[in-house]
Image (cartoon, rainbow, N blue to C red):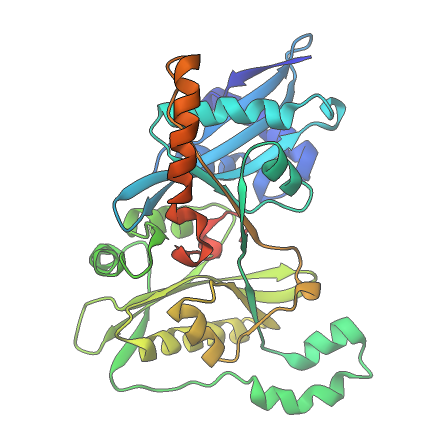
Length: 373
């Protein structure tokens, strides 16, 4: 048997050890990474419930959400991203996954956090939908662009077929276009000040967006341990106003050297500047010997259209490393008593019918809105 207890910062080392036992040696089990993720977030500390064995006091599992600030059409909202859920193998089948969830969500309500979203893997997806009251909003498309077609074919189909794709090298070669109107420049932790003015101008581009101000980008891409990101901004020549930015990371996916476009946002009046950003990041990937570029991007966005104009295409479902399903749950306020419960449920149903978060086409989402890349 086990009991639920709230996480304390002094639990970090023990939590890291349990995570390492579950995931092995990786970023997700590194104490420095977990401290950054759980304690340094500008939106607030993680909300975590731990399961402890009643007899030994040993950790048996955990449920974790981290606060994420959002902008909606009406107002700012404080939501949460679900991540790092696990149950130790010796304690499987004891209801830890669902048993820790409700205490976490109750803590969220008490802290003014209003909803939770997640990108569950195929193993945990049924539990979110069937047991925790989440709604499946649909899948976020994975966009791909070959950078080295010969290498991709050789790795997947063998060296004999690799020469057949040489004509595709010209099609997918990365150009270096010039434009007299704009200039691309690296963004660093020291020159993010113009990002706040850009965010203020761009925040209503889509109905639901994670807040992308300087504090968030500094935490997400510069303060993060164990990962290196490349960030570029774009502005008109002879101007200091930021018109857009792009974030990339070199990594390995399914044994392929992959450059991932982690985030990308552009002023709608300057789509040509967006194409320049994409090309500059693709050039960085090629220079670092990446064979493939990828990005998660909602199909209704201008950024997706720019990517497709630069020869990105939607990955066939059969080739996806996993489905990128978005699940969502709106939290309810605390109930005063049982008599209030029925009326609240009726009101909740009416509110849910009008919940704009239930429409996937209202969201702007990228890899930057979750923790894996």
